[in-house]
Length: 242
Image (cartoon, rainbow, N blue to C red):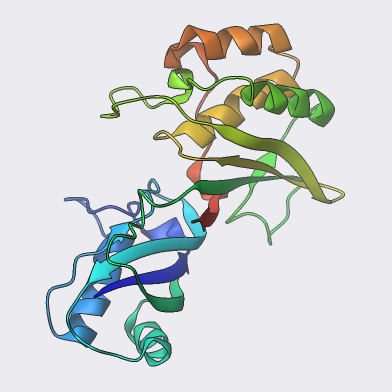
């Protein structure tokens, strides 16, 4: 029987989602909890992999087991043994061919920024020290939807077979006088792509890159042409769609 587990996590303490030889990961903690409760070795496959320090409000993973259990009760049991910074919201039985990664149709990320020293933003948002033109940055976001090859925003040396992605939304939203977030939705994302996109769009917002130069960055296909990768702490995987 195949099950999906839906959960969120504060990625501050973790070396990303996927197993790493040199640090604790979210996948490791989830597998430990499931294996303990089901009394067998459980391997989970996630909807994607978040990097070190990146958070998720809604992540999905699947696992297979012949053990029969009550899904609602399993949510409570998992939350009872998982660390404080990982929370399960749902466990459900699914079709045997439903895959957490390959069956997903879209993923949405948010990147949070703020102005001024705000103790309630420091852990999950990046403080800005220069003014930005959000109207211009939204024009840059719209340009992303005209392209499908994002090799310019892929981490150098990544083992990806293709750099093609379909971006369907890319826009800045204001939530308070000094707080904003960038929302980007696509069928898939490359490693480090969102933080590289945000870093490059911020170059536009600072007046250090024109919209035409932004286009040329995308068309170049070279990571060295794009802006810096922004810090991980302000990035959230917001939702995964099936």
